[in-house]
Image (cartoon, rainbow, N blue to C red):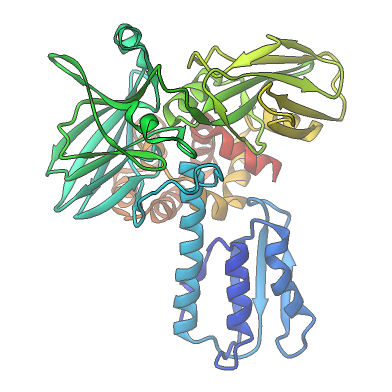
Length: 484
């Protein structure tokens, strides 16, 4: 029997508990099990560590140098032979936990204020294919009959048969005059959606409003803006916790807006980028959880700015909220107050420190709240390691990075085809056969395994090309792996 189904399987706290239960079951007969896994929090491994002390199970656990995120743990367990059914059940359980965590990350479902607002479930996450031309990215999605959600934007759709669709993000600036005339503001990304084949029964547009505690009149203030060749119109929609449901849509430019009579709360994130280390210069953004706007900020910060990864969830806050950024050590902060609006990559606060301390605290406060709405401790390693992830390195260093982080990259790189496009057409690091294998692979993990197989014959120069693409396209991931 094979245990390949558990290879590189991410273990949450619940998954570790389940694994411990399987190992101690009298119906289980394990001889040897080796796992290469990421355990997200130290407490998750407590039950597994406890098995080390039990002579009956003879568990051996060794921890590597921490190349994967947050750590890579090799587990070697010897007792009886683990049944195939146990392996399949555990694998399904772990994958379910991983998908649930990804779902929470995409849609901000952890907000306690709107937890009681109804939401739909049973959406299958789908990775889009991405193509970029003239700095505009187009996302392509295909599915059979069912209900699906784009892993990048949160866009949802339902269909009774096979469909193919494409979308790209569009700046709300194109409707600035219309929004001013309607006295309305954006409530989510503006998306140019095209149906390439098939027929959609429903489409669910993502929004960043917090609907917790809202009266029925607040729901009436939210409308779908539909851009057509003949002009702009607004339509009623059915709101759920994070989406607006539209039945039998005719696709083109779509976005959600709210009218001025409604003053909503907004789900927010705080982003911190390091643009210089000596002296230290940080850019701090307070933004709605709008994937299009966050993507625009990342593009604006390239290539010098590298994100400092800290817990980012803030809020919910009122749309007109203003905040102040403070640090525990001497710094120059400009402007002194920062607002959510306007939605622009140039709307940020700069923190400047001539002589930063090895460790300092940063907090964000709002007049609407007695306590800080965001706090973090920033250490010298946070920004020095972050800046290191964007520097140019030699082929041997890049190849070592690619090799030692293989497990983490396979799990965490979800948009594989844009990387494969550049490796084939720009860098000539892979051939047509490898590209076809990547394209045919059904999941992002299998695509990455096919990519790695192609890189084996490309040598250090091919891995250097892959590393530089990761630096440009996914700096946050490179940052995480540098600092792990």
